[in-house]
Length: 139
Image (cartoon, rainbow, N blue to C red; front, side, top):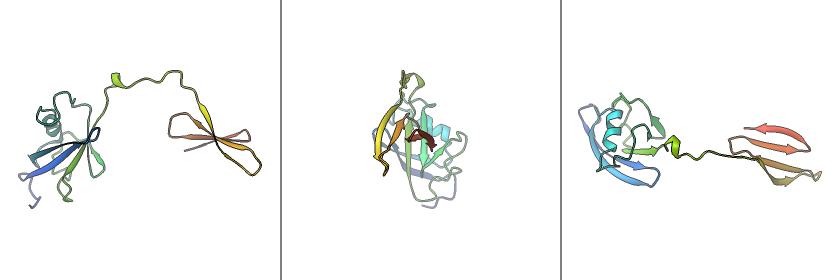
């Protein structure tokens, strides 16, 4: 099928990333992203428990955020990849809050001078190393 007009319809698969549930849909390329998210909340797809605000739609590794743009304008169907990934963001009230977080030190390696290099786990994207009481942060 030629994907040249927003009047064309496209059959595609939506995969929910949390449990790999798959649903197949056929929609016109003129469908807006906001409309697609509303359709996904219908009982026959992923159900009314799926909040519009918590949906994240990905295609070819990129998140679609423009609610008012059509599937055609978002480039859907151009690369013959007809799969969308649906990630469901947890509600803020469901995310556990960290309490009494303490750094823990894990010995990793010894150097030729028998000093120990330790990595401090502070649960973020940075790693802090200690070597002979010299501190440096590595991102």
